[in-house]
Image (cartoon, rainbow, N blue to C red; front, top):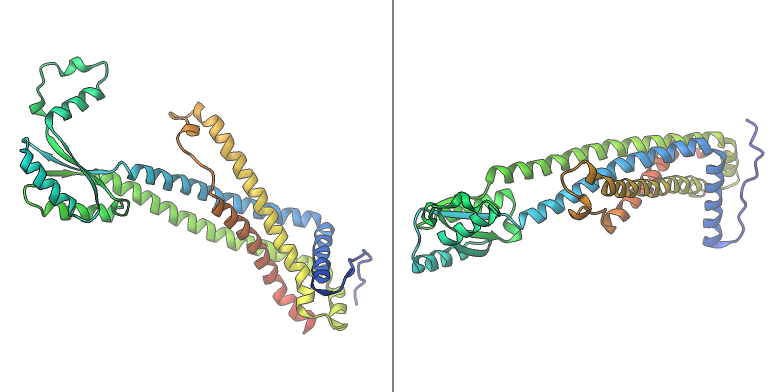
Length: 317
């Protein structure tokens, strides 16, 4: 039998569940202290993996917020080559409001269209001298409910709208809407693939770290098994060790992510055409932060469990 390490191991200080938990925790901390370099590498790997995942999450959260803000401005516009009578406006408005998904309907006559056009040419209004409002189309501007702002919902809404009588040319920037939501879907897929790969990598690395620790203490664990220690009693310190590695990695990843976020807000205005600090860019919501910490702890726990399954079976078998 191999020579056991002479390092002092924690002893159970009190009976009951509280005493056992304290013993398991002290054993886990002692394991981490004895394998500082290996544990630092493991924690660093978990930190890097969770940082990459959290960067994708941060980007996705802000893209979703941007999509939400933008979707509030999405509107369907019906253009008319002639000015409608008040009765025609009222009849059409009533019919449009019956279509599911309609939020607000606003009539823009030619005179108002000209005022808006001049407002967009502040300081250059003279360019419109001699141009009469009759050259601009009148229109209905339709705001949609939140549930009707996706690409498919807008397409369905426009299809229903075109079935109404006396409907003019309908526009809503469909190509831009489609491209934006396609990009969001692409980001979801890429984030999911990268996240899945990193989960497997972290579980593999944590598993090998715990495996090295278990192998170094194999003689001690064999003796514990011989004197009647249960599998759970032997496993628990290592499971806690993996859980703590994951939790520390999650905390470090969030700290680095916050630093990157604040650094970006502080300096991005120097090379971007807008100031991100005033553009509504936000950090991860509380539920995402909690989920990342839980994910880190779970990854560490799963890595430990994977490593222990084989070795504990050999020791206690």
